[in-house]
Image 1 (cartoon, rainbow, N blue to C red):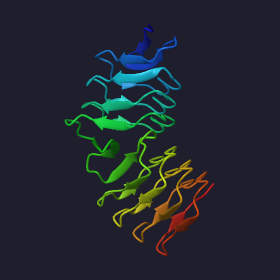
Image 2 (image 1 turned 90 degrees about the horizontal axis):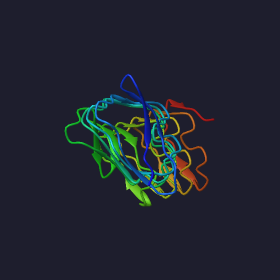
Image 3 (image 1 turned 45 degrees about the horizontal axis):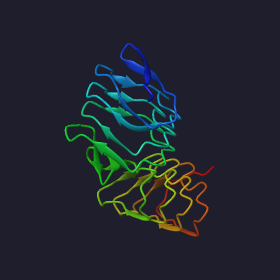
Length: 212
């Protein structure tokens, strides 16, 4: 059995080290206030984690490439979630949020801001082939659907005005998408490596679209 070893400095969980061949369940100690950048990066053994309410911040790439992680719950205290936090978590089917959190919420396992106007992250490991973004969402966040390799169809409502950088990057099965006329900006690399994308409808109202 593997026992994780934590490196904690001034309330920041800087690193979690583990070894062995079995998948691991980790409980972060109460009193930790921040999960640092890259803390669990590439921890392929991490299957389940419990985050205490004392945590207020989750750093960039904190759980990136945790390929065995199946679900996660963001506790009440978290007020900031960094970039690429769940990138490459290809078993992650649900990002849940405690009901008392004042900054984030989850709907169908998809992470939103509390007002449900920003779609922050669709879990990489969800098996659905289509997804309808709910009306009222105004922004599709940076990296929101990145690495969602099962999605073939995504419906964007007329309430959306912006699509973030790398929003659909590596959606390799995405076949077609219609950008509504409400959208005025699309970020860098939004459709990069969408290898199956055969058609994309761009509105005349679009003011900025970058590519790389």
